[in-house]
Amino acid sequence: MSQAPTDDFKALREDFDRLRKDVGELADSLKQAGREQAAATRQHSRETLNGARDRLRDSAQAATERGHEYYEQVEHRVGDHPWSSLVTAFGVGFILAKLLDRGGPR
Image (cartoon, rainbow, N blue to C red; front, side):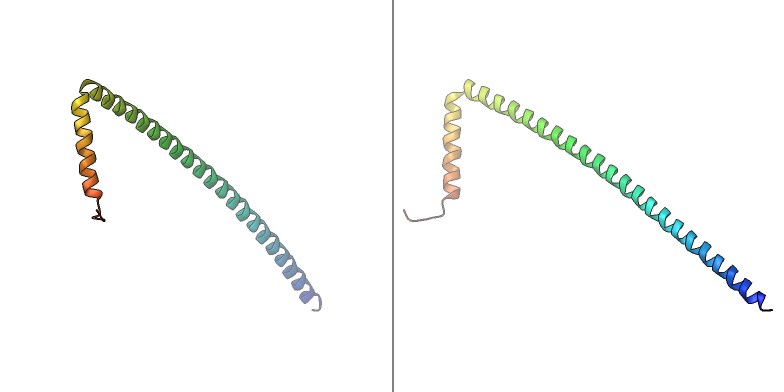
């Protein structure tokens, strides 16, 4: 009878050792899965950022090109009609000056 409790304790100790080993392996697996998920998230974020940067660069380039085209159109229009452009610019300037005048001392 004295042998049975010793065997039970030995079996119990082996079970706890096995459980400790399994929990350690599970923790290692979870750490590795976390590392892999973090790496995948970083890669996805990097790709998203690069895509956004490319779209922004393309949009800026398109806006610059449209600005140059508009500038050339205005330049040609002023060159074709210099007097009417001068009168228009004076009128717009006069109106803006009146709108922005705050009624200060005169």
